[in-house]
Image (cartoon, rainbow, N blue to C red):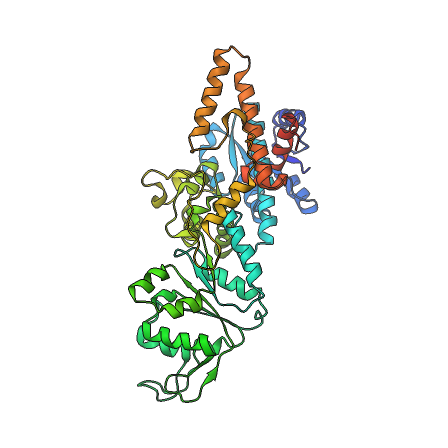
Length: 504
């Protein structure tokens, strides 16, 4: 276990903190000045938490904070300051301090704060390890796991795939993953948004043109089919393609040949086509705006991407990833979401899906005033109006023709994976979002009326045991992952399992 480092020129402060942390079983190392601590940092691995005074001879705590953060940006630093040093406390936050501890401090509060910083350090280490091996797509929700399995099955095939899902849900990411893991991975991946190109230019964009084919065609131009030869062509927003071009696309898919605009020699296409749309193609077929024969050509295998509101459990890991990526792009330390801010984020419906979450995280990286993002720091779009309640189960949706992954798959898979007997005992989670709260209140009332002793302790232990057991079931017994999902540290979940005598 990494130690807690304390730097303060006051011997009594160091002594008191050393004794208190020692009683908690935490290793401690003390320094009387910043110079000695920096020398130790140059020769040894960093501590888990650093507790520093602001006013010290030989270098201030703020100068020390700046040097430590430059070298170890994820190291939590707690700054101790007198009440008269409130301006210094503000400067400490701006410099990336985890928290400040006003002097004279309550010893139990100091230990609690150091514990919290220690858990944050552990969580940060898990996040950094995970981000170092970050896949091209993220998602722990059952519906997304179904999508990943479908990608694995489809990757080795050349079959045409139709990806459906709302705007911003990541359809192009799925197409790129299908290409990356396919036998065509060495070939090009070419994407075109058919809704973003004017009708008069789209034919030339897709199939290319010969010199003199139309006014302004001063040379021969290769189209997207030609550019994607030997690889994958991704046709985004296929539902907006004009009818006459739908006919030409159908011909390519049927016999594998096409002509450049103004050309007379057929070209052979060795291209895997992946199409995507946010529209209901069956409805567009009924309306006569989409060819039925093309629909069936494209709809060999359908993948439905769930919107973010149907996989809210993925919001924390996605938000951490986007905050880390934004920090790298901006050259700053990654911001962290406080638990209330993250809870508010998970209640938002995200009409713009993953793309909207990415934009929000980039906005927070620029605009949030401190390293820890509080609820009040979130953009107005998340704060205006009442937040939506997180549903217990995601709404079912009928899968499309030939579909592999749908919203109903995810909800049913999650329900099937959970045990029938809830570890929450008398206040199980089966039912609406408020049922378990009412059940818990009824159980507490029964115990109080019966005069049972230590109701608070008993109910708290039962609740904590239920949370930990449920998290371990979801993560199939992986403690670090369970702690991460619960928002607690690895040491905390281990200690709680021992205290509660859980058989896990």
